[in-house]
Figure 1: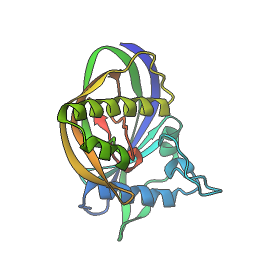
Figure 2 (figure 1 turned 90 degrees about the horizontal axis):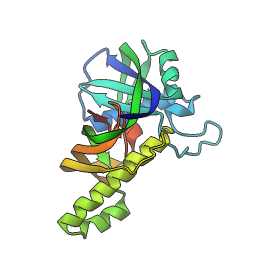
Figure 3 (figure 1 turned 45 degrees about the vertical axis):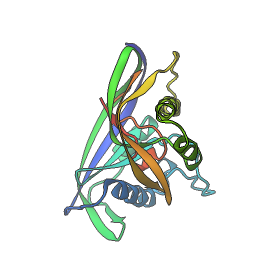
Figure 4 (figure 1 turned 120 degrees about the vertical axis):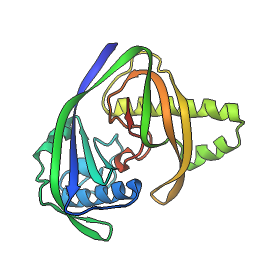
Length: 226
C-alpha cells in the first residue's frame, strides 16, 4: 500500500433512556435535525451558514447514522475535535414527535487511513449508496443491462473520488472500482424517490471503516466497512 493520508475520525454512539425503534434512514434524518438545532452555532453540524442561512455545498465533515437503535455521529478532520468537546450526556433531543434524553455517549477517536492499493480491496456497504439523481436515473432506465452495469461502476468511481476530494485526499493514480454484488431499493431524500444501491464493491483504494460516499452521506447513506 502507498499511504496517502491519515485523517482524524471521531464517533459518538448515543444511547437513549428508552428503546427507540424505527427505520434507520428516518431516525438518522431526525437525529441530524435534532443536533443541527442543538448545535446551531456550528455549521459543521448542519451545513448552513449561520449568518445567511444558505446551504454550504461541501462534503459533510459531520455525518449521522442509526444502528441497532443507537444514534451514531461521525466527525472527520476538524469535526473530530468538535464531537469530543460537546456536552452529550443528558442532552434532550426532539426526534420526530418523540422527546428523548441521551443516557449514555460512547466516544472513540482514531485515524482513518487512505492509500493506493496494488490490488483490489473489498468493501461492504452498511447503508445504501445514493449514486443517482432523477435526471441520470431516467437515462439509466433506458439502458441495456450490460450498459447499466458500466454506468453503475462509472458513478461508483465518481462518487468515491468526490468523497476523497471532500476530505482533501488526492488520489494520484487512476481509480478502478466495480460492484461485486448489488441489491437495489427505493430511498427517499428531501422528498425525492431515489435508487439506493447496497451490496459490495472492490476498488484500488484503501478506505477506512465508516467512510461514506454518494449523495446524502450526512443523512446516513453510503457508509462502508471492510
